[in-house]
Image (cartoon, rainbow, N blue to C red):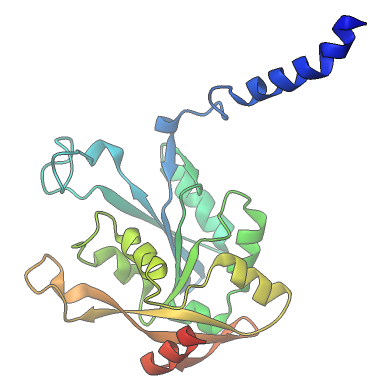
Length: 242
């Protein structure tokens, strides 16, 4: 009886040990490709999907441009693009070309091209709802022109282009909108305001691709999942105050 009385205490002491195991997955980190940004646009025969990945083999703590493997001027990131009948089809095509298993565990930003936004964001909501590894707090943006222009912007203040978008959201420069907001708007109902990005404006003239400078320029209105209008920068500031 004396040992039975101490059994609950022993169970309580041993329970924390069960969560102190090693890796939570059998897949090694160097076997994965972490997609940090997703670019989506309308194509002639479906949807064009572009994923942006950091490249560990080009990273070096002592060089801003990359490691010895890629040269001093090599960028520590890359983009892979495929076109499919839907987002899932394009994603499977990218996975078939990438030698590592793609994971969305570090996906923080999703950019939507103007043409796709005008046609409707329902395919994006469907893919996000079916893919459990996508964070619902990933930021959403709409681009004025082609979404792939994002891959050519000069990276001046951050190391990776997607970090610029994350900073926009964290510093409240734009109206922060996430995938969770999109899912609620599409499946529950209601309009949505998404921040708008523009390219090819004056910026870092002395940087490589300086004429591809990216900036914010108001926002767009989604009504019933489709782009229905544009808010100017002053109107967007009013939305931020609200």
